Image 1 (cartoon, rainbow, N blue to C red):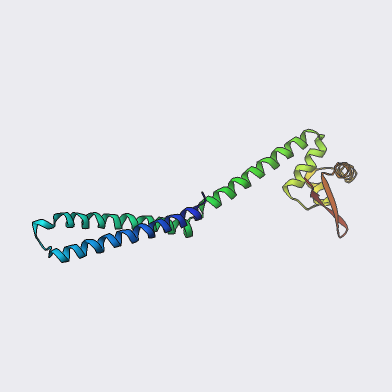
Image 2 (image 1 turned 90 degrees about the vertical axis):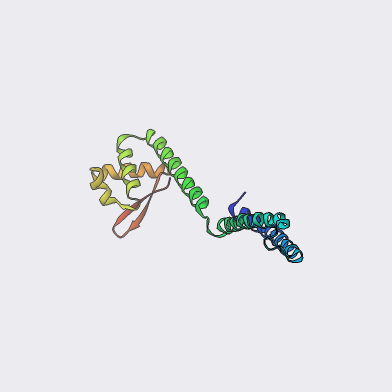
Length: 165
């Protein structure tokens, strides 16, 4: 059950139970007034009832406060679920990337890893980072583009390289 629904349910229950306790306390107060119960031995039952009612008011207040907390303030479950989902997606992405790398040669692996580190890297920077010649890098990028793993976008006189996976 979601926390908001649980909080709302607790508030409703606590209001109903609180109303019953207030009615019970009023009834006991009226009985004590009718009997004139002030330090009389006949009134111990009414005094015990009032003592229990005060304990019940404490329980009622706790349930009401818990309901308000769950309804308005508890957002941790949403944050935890979002973080777990993000971690799961990152792990799936990493596994997918590792599987793709297994099918590539060493030059293609170096290029793909460098592009993954800095998505949108310029072809000139990529050449320096992978320590390849212009011709070799151009050939590797053409092969990766044919396999639909990267895309190149013109940026001035050079090209930016982006991952498609």
